[in-house]
Image 1 (cartoon, rainbow, N blue to C red):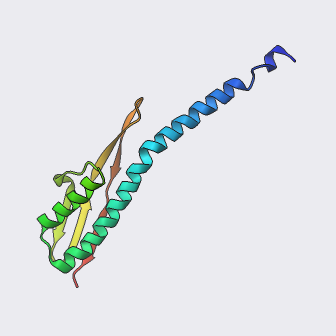
Image 2: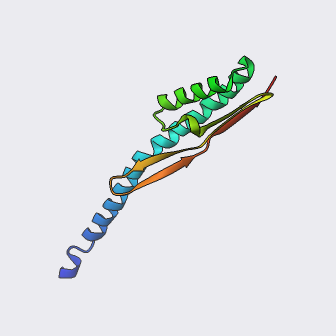
Image 3: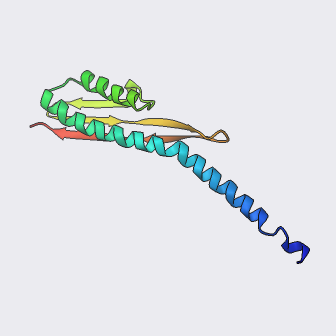
Length: 119
């Protein structure tokens, strides 16, 4: 056996393990945020329908959206929520979630929205 062939694959294997670990760690941090945003989007679609039927006020809708976001542990503030109540109920949310990967921090930007026409 030649000396150069002895450890030829070890470096590549270690590099591949490091890359896979970074991808796995990033997915572990990012996927729950996407799932929470998806759930929030479903909640506000249901809320738009309910608010139309109940003739809810803008403040009631904002409070409900804040409650949903708090339950999902999303950093949504009252000023991130735009609600129009009238012949239609329109809910627009614009928020960012900071993702800390220990070696790099970035913000994920989400803009879920929902609308429903009056009956």
